[in-house]
Length: 282
Ligand SMILES: C[S@@+](CC[C@H](N)C(=O)[O-])C[C@H]1O[C@@H](n2cnc3c(N)ncnc32)[C@H](O)[C@@H]1O
Image 1 (tube, rainbow, N blue to C red):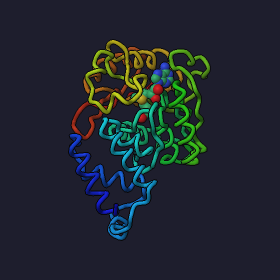
Image 2 (image 1 turned 90 degrees about the vertical axis):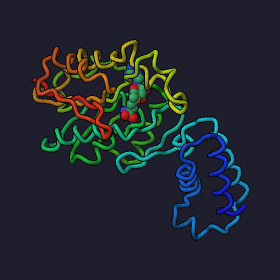
Image 3 (image 1 turned 180 degrees about the vertical axis):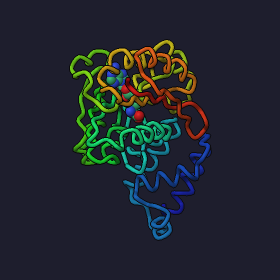
Image 4 (image 1 turned 90 degrees about the horizontal axis):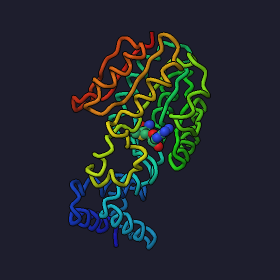
């Protein structure tokens, strides 16, 4: 089968399996699996796929047809211009998280060699991006789950992110290991979905680890822990940046206010939904 025929076959099989954007995903598959971007596709359209390539492609189509996210099939995904390894056991980077990272960058840009604490790091997109975009920035990145932690370590190594130190730990337990008032900024995109909502989420999300989604009965367990146990790790004048679910702004604001934060504000995402809470430690 030629590259061109394989592309046509991929589009039609994805469409048959109910895929909403078969052309787009087929292109991403060819680029991600075989390095065939638009330019190389045109150049190599009459080349015969080798047996191994055909097997890889058929397996990818099959997995995608069963609802597995394309990102896991490709084994990598992009966040703010960087490429990150992903797979079963780690949350797929979301574009929404860029809002939280950009707000944090604005807050710490003027600080010399800022020290940042990131809780619930997953693939490491937040910690690594901060260390790459803010001069002299060092980040301690804490992640509990072993599979996710493996991706965190691999991504730190792939990016050569010397400013990021990964620690495996449970944020409900390990807060005593850090000195109070020792960070300029705290950032987190914790699990925040209400537990009973998880089974109703789209098919692709069901492939992602429940431990990355489950925020407890009301979705706020991690924010309560962060406000009560981790906020003291910030120095006076330090910044907290938390990604939130669209209906959680009021509740998270209240938690931060109770811990003496000021200048608390909500930032919206591109769809105009509340996405981030920022606050300053008094
Ligand atoms: C919503 S994901 C965010 C991942 C990554 N920061 C991102 O923005 O893509 C939450 C992460 O918290 C981790 N996690 C869950 N419970 C935890 C705990 N008790 N302590 C530390 N990390 C935890 C999950 O494994 C998951 O990687």
